[in-house]
Image (cartoon, rainbow, N blue to C red; front, top):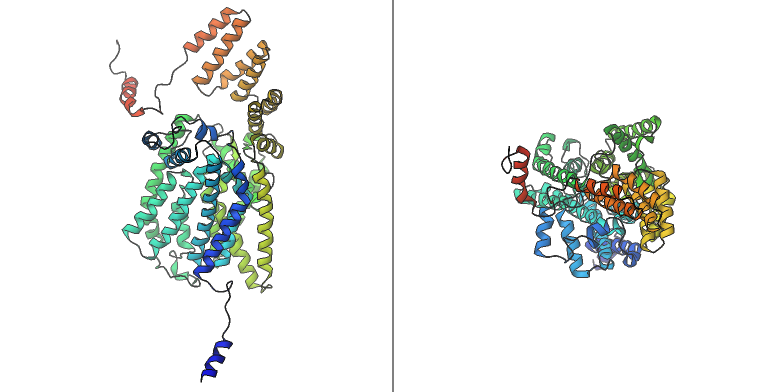
Amino acid sequence: MASIGTQAQTTQPQTSFFSKDSVARTVVLSLLLIVATCAIYAPVNGHPFVNIDDPKYVVDNPHIKDGLTANAAVWAFTHGYAGNWHPLTWVSHATDITVFGFDPAGPHDENMLLHAINAVLVFLILKRATGFTWRSLMVAALFALHPLNVESVAWIAERKTMLSTLFCLLALGAYQWYASRPSVGRYIVFTGLFVLGLMSKPQIIMLPLALLLWDYWPLQRMFADDRQPLPGVETIPGKSLSFLVKEKFPLFFICIVDAGVTMIAQHVTGGAQPYTLWIRIENALVSYTRYIRKAFWPSNLALYYPHPGRTLHWWQVGAAIVALAVITVLAARARKYRYLIVGWLWFLIMLIPMIGLVQADVQGMADRYAYTSFIGLFIMVCWGAADFAAERHLQRALLPAVSVVAVLALSVVTWNQVGYWKDDITLWSHSAQVSPGNWKAYFYLGSAQDVAGLHDEAAQSYFSAAAINPTDPFTNMNIASYEQSHHNLPLAIDYYKRVLPQAWNSEQKTMVLTNMALIYRQMGDYASANECLTKQSALPQRKVDWQGSWWKQIIPMIKDALHIGGGNS
């Protein structure tokens, strides 16, 4: 009997680390993701602050210069700054100053670790929701090591993207926890995580719609009669479409409030939309196809891609519409593979806030905007490739081999892309080289060269920027300053005059008129100097200090608007 039992034991199929799911395997694979991510991004520890947004967000931000204090925390929650209301991001930067001072190494390492954690969350959430370990791991690996995500990780000012995605993924994971056994408490938990994400950056504002996609697949709460069982996954009770939509009503209300707060913050610090609605729609359609191309062929990556404005041709817009429509129809018709339409719509929907329909700046698109949305494309590719290989009975080792090659190739490109962020001159020189017509790159290259003491080289960069965009007030301002410092006074006056019609605010106009008055006096033209000072004194002054105790000025503003009291009628 003993021998028979022993024989039975020896003939049982042996399981290996790779074929049997276990907590140990999950932990090892998660650690592997973290190690790989940190290895690729390790050089950022020695990188400086970038000369765009990092000064405004951290180095020169007067509200957090003393670190995380009570005043800084109150300010973060009660003020819009730099066109945004994201208090948790300001608290994060203030905490960095408390811990690291103004040493960029610590914040860089923090971004790197947050990115690694986000990658692990992608892996764990997909694995738990679908039961597929290796497909989930590949999606997470693509997310962790794709070159387009370098901009979000290597740029300290993009802490907001790291944090908002962290809470977005936590909310997504908590949503399955809620859906498995719905309760008010669990609803409050995942909703609270969503709110924390919005308080880090409003880019995840489309998450409620993404949750509806998640209801369709992988949770399969929607149209449950046609559900396809997933291996080792708890079956979640199905619900009607109307119930699932109504279930998200509190989330939609939160989104409306956050959108209103964001628009107010952008209105306070920003200007009018620089392009018409139709131009923005054209750019959005073409940008979707450009993001797809960069997902599969990530070359010529730059910080800032110039907005095409009116230069797009009808055939470019038409081709984009056809491509997007065809992919949508094909994904929708493949009902057996629910992940296709979910991944595709995830990509489209999560990009909506950043696709340019509401233009926040002058870029046409940006690598950092794809950070969360690309998860949808990665799901389509990884699940699609695995099912393709299985249905055609391809050799078992083929797909893992292709996956390893793809990850290694992306890692090499990502490593090189991280290297371009080693200093401002390298970053902007590369951006100008790979994105023709990028006047922003030339402008910031000139700024970096000025800081390095290369003033003549900086002037040439400014001239290159002005040749592309002759109306930019900041470029003309810097050229005027350069000419003024070299005593080319008439030329300096000419460039200062170019600034005035395009100046962003009264502060910039004040600076221009002050410098012009000084030059006219040097030239002996006191009448023109006095005229500049007269214009300066007549400039409208800011009525509300939005970075101060703005709430104390609401009643005076209302009285002023209604002409109530304070003056003679």
